[in-house]
Length: 479
Image (cartoon, rainbow, N blue to C red; front, side):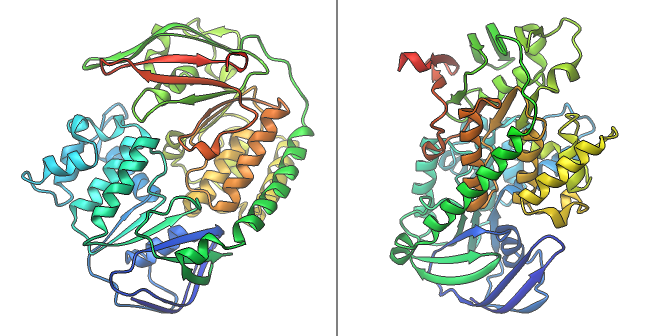
């Protein structure tokens, strides 16, 4: 394949490639240190977008893609097909059979992607990691000549990341792979070439060995730390508020469905000054537990849960609780389907709404503009949220959670979709927020390198042997 003199541009991003040649049988990694590269590149290589200038020659007819954007599109399709928001969507097996897999091949496909036990579960009931595995199975079902993987490890726990590497090694024997990543350590052994994009332009192609010695990463880390200092200064300008002790209290909490027990006997107390990381494998119940705390899970009212001094089910105002909680998650990202402007997304953080339905103050508007400038998105204030690429959307949602300086900041895999620079920016900023006790963090990540030094308390979901999990707490003083 040969890409030559290519240019594609939108209101919020662009992509420039002078010359890029990929020989048959080569497997490439793509690293974008800064700029919205992945979504445009995927769109051009899958034929969803047409270059404004230049050409792409030799692209195979059958190209499949696994990406967060494709995952979002599938969810929107499932919602559109359902009459009620309470519907669970098509089952895993139904989705795969409609994607080109036949009844004979289905068991093997489910087995290699660890979906056998989820065969009859609806798409909208899957965890983040389970959904990612389904998207891969869906792509494999189409038997592509080329498989494009945009952040394929995002949302997967340690065991499933290792399993994915093994599976991709098998696929690489007969399918050409192109892997886009913002993590320098997520390159399977079969990747032999790298393409580096900086500021939305292909700047260099090189061997894997040369990439491992490249100075770009050190430069990016230094720049991200400098930007995170600016973000922290912006937060410190806001007034500090005292909040109830404890912030969160769960007593003998249990969640079960008709076919399974998720967890029981959960007793957990989060006090001011404590930051917690919630850990456990995909499907263990992490997102379910966060949903109980947020009040988004229906079983929160059948359990003994107190949030910011208010007991769930006591006739409390949901807004009175949520106004002191900031949240970033894949679930929120998928739910944020309104097409308000980038500025309005930030302002909605003050009111914890999806979209802006209340009139913000002049001070709030001015503060939101300051945040946009700090994120280098000042020129996108009037751009519709859904016109932005996935990484820009995620960065906005992180700022939306931070802008009101909440008592409790819930972060469920916050870095998904971010380029390297913005991932490091958010990482350093969160560490500083926790160290300064600006907000109390409840943090979920499957990547060891994303562990924050300022977090010294851990809540681990541990398998019990009967399919459910128990929560084991480790506090700063018990290490």
